[in-house]
Length: 507
Image (cartoon, rainbow, N blue to C red; front, side, top):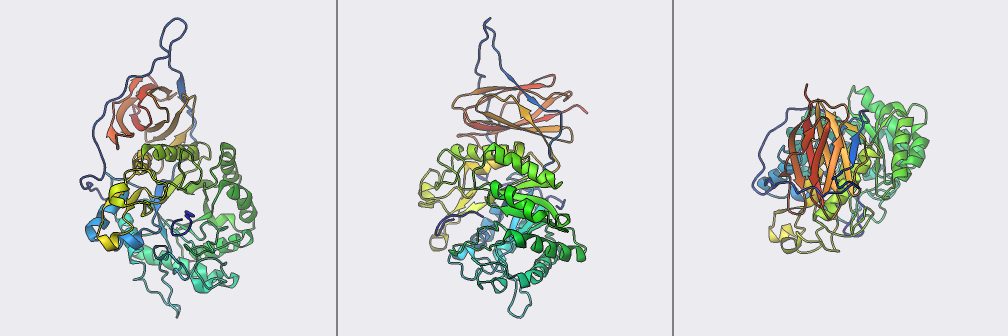
């Protein structure tokens, strides 16, 4: 989970179709720019052609974000504001997320930041109080009702009474309590399944190398030698109940930690059979070599990898940095990370850290639209941290929200990635295909317009269906369709923009 210092730090269901309230997303039409020309020696204009591999790479499971810990605040907003937040995340005219990470709280014992102290359900006598965590349960139900394909439960800390230090932060899970912990998580899974919010996956320990001993949030150390024990205990308990909830692990904070530690615990006898997906975070700002090793590590065990958490980069780079930047500058950095995770690590899922945040850093009403060095780039949408005192329940959008939507709205579960080579300098192309349709997400990081020619190889009878763009002045704006000639599409990419092209093949 995001380590902000101090106060900072699948199931297919019937999909609900609603319309966003006014102002939730901009859908103004926009035209394309004239392609920049480059000249050959004979004076003719030439554009280098990027090529889409005809070979399928990984299948995409989902794209999502987490519910830590903003439901503790938004759950106190009025119902209309809660409903708007849910539509923005889960609705078809919002992000249409295909995954949502629900935080199974550890009770918040000892945590000094109230909003980061989620309830657990365990009572002192061993019974359960399922009325706890009202905000978290509210948004889990919203996600289920909207038909989010993969509801994921993740744990930052076991209940404090099973920890070696008696707190929800710092300390380890007592090895003698591993089976109790497994039964508890399985009981939580059973309870929500009975309520119509079946959890498709469970992560029993999130960022196991960081206990957050300063107690600004929940955390729990899980050494390499204990991870396989917990996985086997939980996997056995889930299997004994006939469940279909898969385990994801180990949600290492970094790709380097993932690559060095996963082989140690996953290779233990009887462990790999209980792991459905391998998950990593990318807080180490990895290079291509470390990302490529993620793919190799996962493949060596016959598993798929997920990029399950990232945030808090800025100031022109993708490394950890304190900044609040709601502009296209940070959105392009986010889209670059997604491109790298999908095309270099070949991850099958991308999950942003926290969907909503109050870490604006300045007065929300006057400063939410501008950069500052006091806030954090941890959210997609922001709300006023002083809402309880001033009654402000407005939601403030960022370009990161729209950047994520350039993928999540078009790249649906079951889409298959195809690698792309030869993209122009400053341009990144990520290509997905599903059921005869291509979704091509293109980042133009350049300060000027760039021309793109893209050869889709064996694709037949291509037709441009739709083009949607986010830029400094556009939010999911309708854009001019690319030109199509045979299996090649050509388009002009406005400066500093993210464009998604949807193309259909002739059946």
